[in-house]
Amino acid sequence: MKSLRGPKWKDLNNFTKYFELGNISFQAPKSNPPFPDRGWEMEPDTIPHNFDLVYSQDIQQRGDVSALIIHSSSWKYTTTGLLRSYQGHVNMFVELVKCNDLPVNESIYTKDVFERVINSEICNSFLGNKHPKPNVDSFQINSDEWPSYLCPLNCKTIRVNSRNWLYYDSQPLVDGPTNVIISTPIGHDTYIEVSFTIVRSTPKSSNAYTTESIVDISEFSKLVKNIIKSIKVSVNNDHKYDLPTLSPKPEDLKLAPEVLMAWSGRGVSNKRDDLKNSNIEIYENFVGKRASTPVI
Image (cartoon, rainbow, N blue to C red; front, top):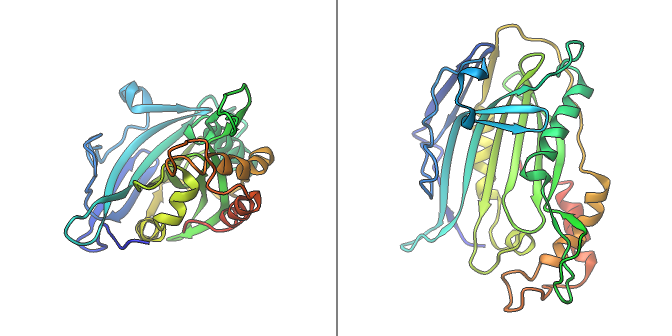
């Protein structure tokens, strides 16, 4: 494992976002993004509750919900020393999320309704993406589809500054980021979601399994944990609520070791269909450990 250089937990910025139902505040280092792919930290501090007043391109539709980004930050990680080669980055998004057409007799303060809404959001985001099943021997694509991510994993309720949040994370099965997501209801049809996208990069691999052994996630997760610990939410008319416990689909959990094994040679050898290791037990053990080990 290489030593990494990332943002320092000092000289912090204080952020507060105001909306009709209350506000959220937190601390984080100043953004230091690896790529100029958006205007980080450029969102307004006061957010309209009526999404009709927001440009439609700023709103994401994910299943039964509409999500508006109210804050974004990004931090790059490099190796230490003179060269400081890029090793990855963490993106943070704070979103105000509203349910679309929730029946008047339902509320996300109720455990089963919130579970249904969150599961729909996951299935309709990139975390629910599928990809064609490869034939590992000839790499001829057939019509079967495999999950690209295993999510939600390690679901639990966490207590942050006197408020309960629903926590879950994800595991990429082909390539892509690891995600940490926390959510808390602030109204009968509205919740706050804070998500962290952890991208780890290495020239020696372009698949999820081998990246795990090359770039340690612990340096990235320290930043995520520190930011989460600083989050405070104030709600004008708060309400008691219970949070659900989520699990990945049983069929996805069963397929995950096979998916990891099928793609474990990607970016490692000249032949993209070569397996790094064909012992399925290695990948079963990996999935079992990952499904019982939260990122934070």
